Length: 379
Ligand SMILES: *[C@@H]1O[C@H](CO)[C@@H](O)[C@H](O)[C@H]1NC(C)=O
Ligand SMILES: *[C@@H]1O[C@H](CO)[C@@H](O)[C@H](O)[C@H]1NC(C)=O
Ligand SMILES: *[C@@H]1O[C@H](CO)[C@@H](O)[C@H](O)[C@H]1NC(C)=O
Image 1 (cartoon, rainbow, N blue to C red):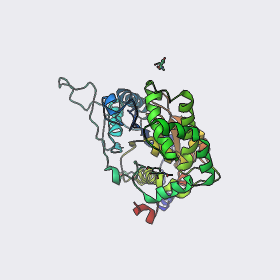
Image 2 (cartoon, helix red, strand yellow):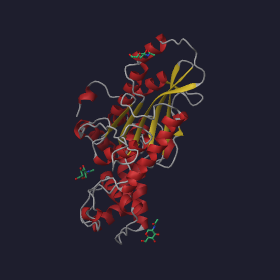
Image 3 (tube, rainbow, N blue to C red):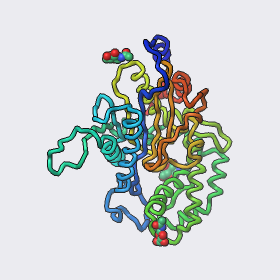
Image 4 (cartoon, protein in one colour):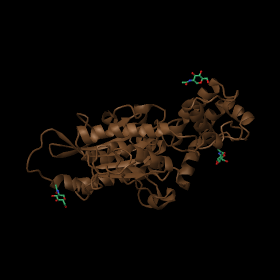
């Protein structure tokens, strides 16, 4: 905060800039369509059925990210002129979660984003047309507190378990007994009555039936399937820290899940404002889990998508703008690869006008959701 506000005060402009100007953008997207990450013991669709490993990006997922890359190119290269059409690592930085589907998504996306870059050997026979290789950085899973929300953290498990154990939530689980009965009678495994069981089964069936329209075994009726989706939607944001079932928001849990990434985004903004980086387009290729964590911390998830989940190749964009010598942020979201980014800045719980939020009030607000002290070291 101090860095930014002192810069804001001491920064003077020789010429008053009329209108507003995009200074930087940070995108955080979900990978494209994938195979299930796992199955249940009696599942007719075991790993061998898919022909590629569990959780692998499929061709549709590659297509989705190629489309999203074109959308983002239109906005950030053609319309706003944020970065040049010629790829430069001084302007664009791409970081991915280490999960293969996220890295693959980043590569497909950047192939489209820089499809007009003259930086490839066009005289090489067999070279993919218009493809410039763009570096995609990543960190080992266990060290990636920013992008991999599932990195082991005992305190997160403790806080989520406390929410699960709330009597009102236990009543909710008990009210879903027909789901648990069906699962335990048919899946080939004895699952406990917990949110984990719901999210595990929903995660498998959503892909098999929802994405691939595979024929389901008889016990998975439409009622069962829809009931499972409803149960998952009703529980997931609460388990991850949003108010519900008689409990308020759990700021500590929100901070430990999404706060490392928020911290990274604020750090990038400070570096741009402080002129210590030339990068203007920061790209993060990751998962719905971190997208949800960020949107929950910003208090805008339900306003954007209700209790649902960010779809494949959906993207959050956090933009830094300048108007009359002052910095502002905007937050946008695109629900899938075919849709344009929609401006949701007015949903932020801040005093924003004309779709612009003053940077210092944004930073002050998110500060509560950024881990500090011992929280940073805890694993
Ligand atoms: C349910 O079982 C899973 C896996 O065995 C375990 O990690 C989890 O803690 C259990 N949850 C409850 C509420 O018993
Ligand atoms: C899904 O599969 C069923 C039967 O296998 C078929 O009738 C239906 O049209 C398919 N739906 C879609 C969206 O492909
Ligand atoms: C930012 O830094 C660069 C290189 O250090 C310098 O050339 C440029 O004038 C600086 N811009 C501003 C606005 O201070």
